[in-house]
Image (spheres, rainbow, N blue to C red):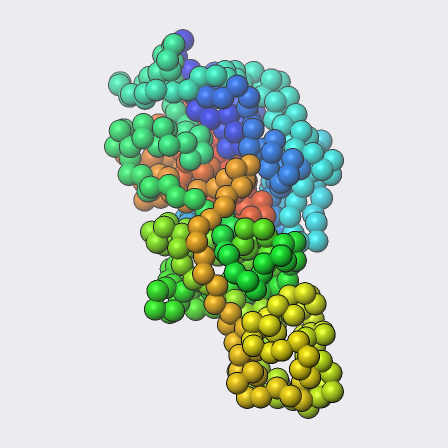
Length: 417
C-alpha cells in the first residue's frame, strides 16, 4: 500500500499534523510511525505532568521574541496559526484551558492526559493509523515516492512529514538525504556553581539580572543586542548544585551554542537588585549608612532580599557580623555594592531536566519554506516541531511551535494531495 502521507514521530507536532490533515481530507490514507512503545510521551511528562500547552502572548511579533532560534522565520507562520487559534482548537474538542498568572496555559484538568486523550480520540475517529515500536533506519525517494525503512518493514508514501524532535539518528538520516543539519546542543539547563555565597541556601529564590561573561570579563555575545549587554532578568532559584529558575534558563537558551563551545565553563555576573537604579546605587548605600546608622548591617536587608542570602552577601563583602551601618568604611560600601549589583560567579558544568529536555540545533532553517514547512530541496518532504533548528524558553512556547508547524503542514498537504 502507498500511503498519501506518512508522519514519522508520534509526538505533539506529528499528531497535530495528522489530525488537522485528516479533518480536512477524510479521503486520505495517513499513518503515524513512532519509534517508542508509547505516543505523546513528551506531552505526558511536560509541565510536571500538566502539559503547558501554550502561552498567553497574542501578538505574533511579541511571541517570536521568546525563540532564540527561529524568531525571524516564525513571524509569518504565527500570523497563520498562534496562541488564540491553539486555544480555540482545544476548546472546540472539549478540552478547557486556563491561563495562569505567569501567562502559561494549561488544561483546566491540570493533567496532560486531557491533551493525550483528545489527540488519540481524534486520530481514531479520523482513521489515522498509528504504529509504535518502529524506529526508522533509512529514507529514500524514487519516482515521487518515499520509501521508509524500519528493521522489519518498508513503508511507501506520496508525501512524508518528519516530526521526530531532536532525535540524533533521524537528523543523521536527514543529513544523508542532503539536508543541512545544525549540530544539536542542549538548551534550557541550570548552572552548576560551587560558591560559599550560595552554600546551604538551596530553595531560596529572588529576582535577579544575569549576564554571561567571557574570559576577559566582557559580555559574552549571544546574537541578541539586549541580552548581550544586559543579560536576562527573572526569578533565580538557588539549588543544591548551583542556580536555576527562569532567569537562568532563559540565559542558557540564548547562549546554548556559545556555552557548548566553552564546554560549560564560564562566568556570570548577577545583579541581585535589578529594579534599583545602578548608576546611583553607591549614593543609595551612603544614604542608608546615615538612615540606619545604629542598626546592625547583617540583621536585615533594607532592599527586600531574603535574610539568609543578605547575610551571606554581607559576609562576602568583608563586613563583620557585629558592625553597624555607621561603622561601614568606604571599602566596605564598595564591596557591598559589588556583591549586590555585580557579583561574579564561576560556572562549572550544567544540569538538564530529562523530562523537559530541549535542544538547539536540527535542520537548518534555510532549508525550509516557512509558508508550507516543506523542504526546499526535497519535494514532498515536510518538517515540523523540534526537528527544525527552532527552540524557545520555558512557558509553552516549544509546544506552540509544534502546533503552528503541524497546522501549516496539514494545510499544504490538504491542497497538494
